[in-house]
Length: 335
Image (cartoon, rainbow, N blue to C red; front, top):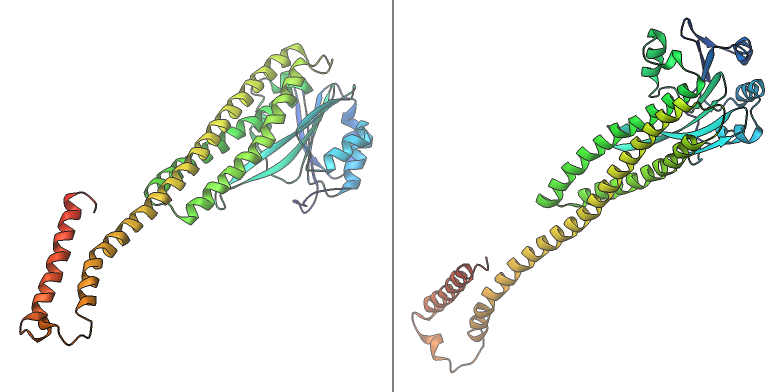
């Protein structure tokens, strides 16, 4: 049973069969078309886009002898990255990440990879991935892909997934730099929402990348005959890349934590400025209110009430007091 969001209208099956001298690429409509390639000495890569048509995946699993638990993990798209050795094949799960420039959100897609002695199966939730450069290298016979085995092809797929993390981190780094300047100059509720969204994305990235580090480390130390010694050296390079991604991710998390303090400090400073202005206004009006209150009393024996210039004198006194207080505040840098 497929557990997850349906992201493709129909299931698309693409087959690559190659060695160092020849190459064949075709789209197949049924698993039966892949049977002749199962026992060939060349490397066969079958990529499936769309997981909701369970019968097709079941036929493919039966064709290559995949364990029911493997099929269950492929159809459940909420698994953590992991690696399992079943003897005749190795099963891998990794998360491919996409950064949406419009919504500024990270979309996660589970990639399941099964590789044996001469075949690689990759299962994706939807069409569109980071494997196009690999397909171009196979078509043009560039690099080592067509000269190596299925384990090297599985390594190249993992390497493409990990390298794409750097692209996402670069976009996130630019957003963090822009947000930092905004928080200092003009902190707002919208800036706080962006900050919390970035923190959530950091947590999502960490959940995808940290387990993958252990997966690659386990493959590197694996004694499976399906993983050649030379491929282990390349896996070490992918492991180093995951460490770099994790270090960058931790740096971003520390920056975001510091930016939260910057936001709270900026908001507090803005509030202090508002309270400062209100306090100055209240202080200036305190003596003016006192004078107005005194001469607002309705006593008969108040000689100032009968003076000809009493009204303008009171105004002059009030304005003089207000002006003197403003001058004193500016002189003491209170304004």
